[in-house]
Structure formats: structure tokens, C-alpha cells
Image (cartoon, rainbow, N blue to C red; front, side):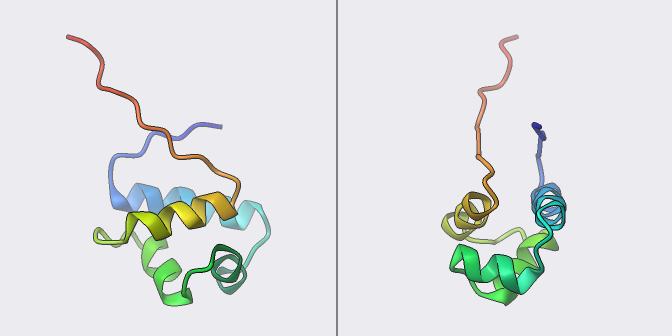
Length: 74
């Protein structure tokens, strides 16, 4: 499944949905990803200044990928 995200809130929503779909609680995912629980809670809430490296760790722990596509040509 692919999700187009444009805002920090949308990233948080995708991560929360994937975590719940995997049957994980926040503290379990935080431990598996090597990030703090507070970081994960803030990430799922759409914190705009969340660190990219830690966000990628969370996505990796969920088995998700992070793809960037160029804008469509005019």
C-alpha cells in the first residue's frame, strides 16, 4: 500500500495506522526502533520538527519504506 503524505500530521497518521495494524503498542515500537517513547508519541501527533533519522528508524522497524518522487513535469 502506498500513501502520499505532504504534512507532518499525515506522516504521523501513517505511522500510527501501520503500528496499530502490526498490533504494536507505542512503547513496543519505540523499543524496536531504538527511539524514545516521547519521540514516537510526538511523531504520531505530527510534530513538525521531528528528526528525520529517527523517523526513518521508526519506518524501518515497521517494515515501511520512504520514497520521494519528483514533482510532475508541467
